[in-house]
Length: 251
Figure 1 (spheres, rainbow, N blue to C red):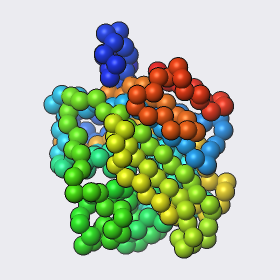
Figure 2: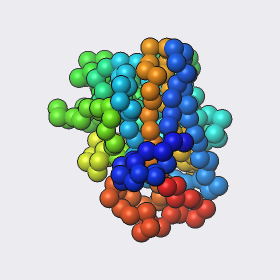
Figure 3: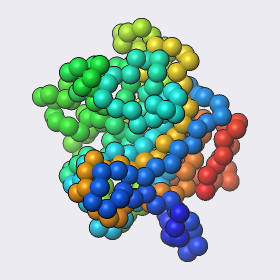
């Protein structure tokens, strides 16, 4: 934790700083495991990539996660619908387009081998215009889409609704929604997230991870984190927010 004026401009404000080891694959993270699991949650946090941040370096981010914390960050295969799900907000390498790198039962974009070579969906799907990955038109971003910049504080809010447990995607109704500075980044319904009602949202994982040593020495700052059962918004005073039972509002 370091002193930074943060999005509110307070000179004595403290923020979280996440950095990866210089010249190495790796990252930094923190996690809040909820004492009570939930079917639907909102998470809101402010973030800023430090001046000089290298958006050409491959990365992963963080967000709301379902299932046991041991599964948080798990990758490479399709979830069963009973073990885990995760919706982790990050930027697309080089383009700087924000999206949620999403692991859930019905993921479809990069799953040649569901048991061994199956990688998360990008929601919105920023990978192409529909030729290979973004084959579901409603999952693609609009033509005008924000690009992230270093040195700027952003407000990110994420909503995950686990939906009704189903045995197939036919009647699935899970839902992911994202907002950046209170402007919608996308709303993705009919997601097949789970097959059992025992799979619930159990943690908020905030992370910065780089796949190799090409990343910058500087990293990401995070401030003013709130998790709630209701919409939070970027201009909401924390003193007016009623956090769900057993939650802390982190300032």
